[in-house]
Image (cartoon, rainbow, N blue to C red):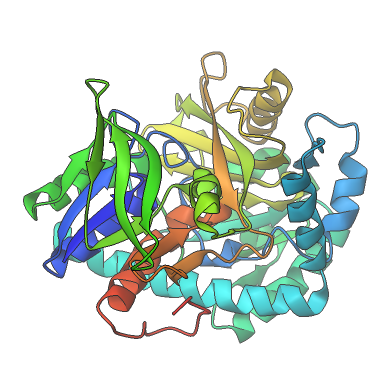
Length: 419
């Protein structure tokens, strides 16, 4: 089967590799000059089943109210006269009920855990190295109330098969000694030994090289204009593109995969397919490590500030926050400074804090945090999009599951696929 994948981020690149392994003729189209240059470029680096709690949870409305007027708030809505944004926001609030949160968490954990196992097998099959560390993820807390709530979440995660173990202050410091500068403020933590970390951009680039060896063609610096429907056959007939030379072309295939993240909904709306996806801007900062002994080696999650930290070789990546605003990727200096300030407070002697590399990307967030994976109302159009802040965590499993669905097989996990 000839397949065209729209989008060369981590989701599209993984999809290309798995589909090519099944013998399909695959073409990937993206406007960037290389793979993984937008949302997949500089995320927090975590493969984190333990971080699967949806942004939409019972605590979220209170966090949103407390964030009003705070430009550096971890979770921030900037509402506009945009009905699409308001409709998405109302759906998000509906998902914050305890019952819906538990349902969503169950499915997210199932997909995230499956994806981690797929990644382990992919790594064994390809030998890819991407500054990866298999040292687990440690959540740490400096607020008693937040720690108490986290213990309830950790207990639920254990029920779902994620071994997120509660730690005392002393155990937190034993697990990651680099946290000693804030030892007196720590109240506890929890640790998931099976979680991982690694450089998503490096991984995607190497996987694309492996995919090319399987015959995958990457059409880069190529603008996707629209999908052309065949109304009589209820299929997609072709995709119109503008190639690097500025020429319009139409490319046809047997099947099409939508993997354009935050831009998926707009491209599908003219076809009558309405995806509830809205861009959630996340920020990251990357610092050069100058004192390796003072920098963390275990990947960390700072729940109070909604930040994650990952050691990527000689670099320290901090990423997080969620800004529901618009499609702008412009950097907000206030939010950038919040990343630098928090990192320096935690690890004062670890890095060069004078020369950070800041970045912002648009996470494709659904109200439930569950992605769209599977078929659409158009038989030859498939979906693999809407992974929010867990694209790196869910990438391998989502792509494997989609390849199964396209081959007529039911995926091996309990997840609400559109099939």
